[in-house]
Image 1: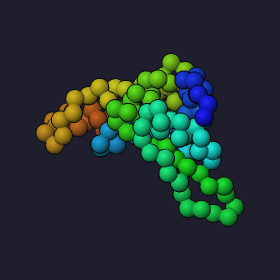
Image 2: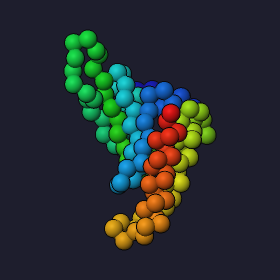
Image 3: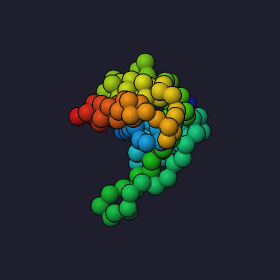
Amino acid sequence: MCEFSAEYMAGFFDGEGYVGIHRDGVLVSITQVDRRPLEWLRGRFGGSVARHGRPMPSRRPCSQWVIGNRKAMAFLEWIRPYAVLKAPQIEIAMVFAGLPKRGRWMTDEERGQREGLRVAIAAAKH
């Protein structure tokens, strides 16, 4: 299998990727018809690759690479200098990942900060 550069993957992610903030942390995914780049990413960063969506006669089957938290952040840091369209979302995810993990003992202020970042990343998508 060929080697992919950070520059290529940043463009690939800008077009086909997703970054989100969830209760458990940062989630990154890429959905694509061609599985090869997804398998390469799985080999380099971890995560999983699986079929995505219901098979439909009018649509080619897609696969999705999904990765979360520390491994997702390693991927985002790798492509960060080259990302264009998703750069604001990546920056928000970096801030979120830098927050202390406190579980159910979070203060209302910490919950509010996390919710604010979740709302900000959703707004950056539009």
